[in-house]
Amino acid sequence: MGAMKGVILSRNPSARIIDITHDIPPQDIGAAAFNLLACYQNFPAGTIHVAVVDPGVGSDRRALLVEAAQQFFVGPDNGLFSWICEREGEFSARQLTNEKFFRRPVSATFHGRDIFAPVAAALSLGVAPEVFGEPLPEILQADSLKPKVIDENTIAGRIIHIDRFGNCATNVMPADLSAKRVSSSWTITLNGRKINSFRRFFSAGEIGELFCLKGSAGFLELSARNASAAQILGAQPGAPLLFISAPLGEIKAASN
Image 1 (cartoon, helix red, strand yellow):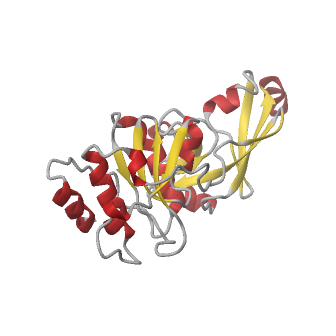
Image 2 (image 1 turned 45 degrees about the vertical axis):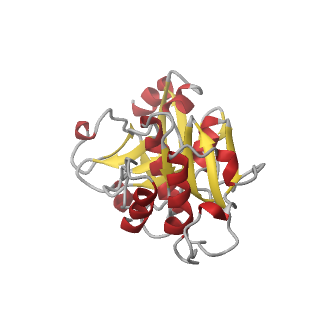
Image 3 (image 1 turned 90 degrees about the vertical axis):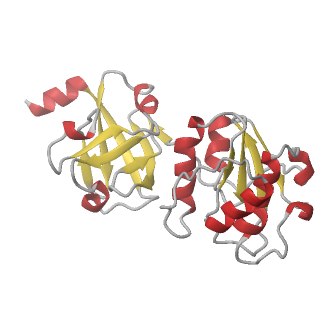
């Protein structure tokens, strides 16, 4: 937002500000977490990410500074950064309590402007992380990214994000499938529909065809060429799905 940029630039006129996105649906913490997860590795060490999707603003939810992957993440403690922390494994977190760095007065409805932006500006000027508050042993965790292995032929996953084109990103990665069976065919079931076509890129499918591909964030996605897979499937974020494998020989025998 413009007000947040103004606060940062008023405290550090040399700051370089890059907008990742302003297209997160209102109150959609999961969409924000996915977008951060998909892009943070493209930024250099020392980058300060300010993320504000904050339906709990003004309540007793904590304000956070997280260090992970040699980068900083500033925002609310509502699961927004938990997928990055889960992927990285090693991280540290602090609660933002040192009011010296806050903009005054602090609004009960705009912590992005009054807490997160000024803290980010201070970080960009070299203020040490430990100055902002005490360490936290843990942060609020969103549901894990890891799919659940039911048995050697079945992996249970879920939709973790739907983009504006209707592509449905799952929490399953190609390695999750290849680790189970090398010589097998996989079928995805979601809302009573079965998908067993795998493509490398969008235009490889037929118009309107449902298929699975590896998305740019590394997760397997359900897509449809020139159409919304989410609309076709009636899918919503959080919807459960199954990846079911069968040996290629069984598939061939069944088709004869």
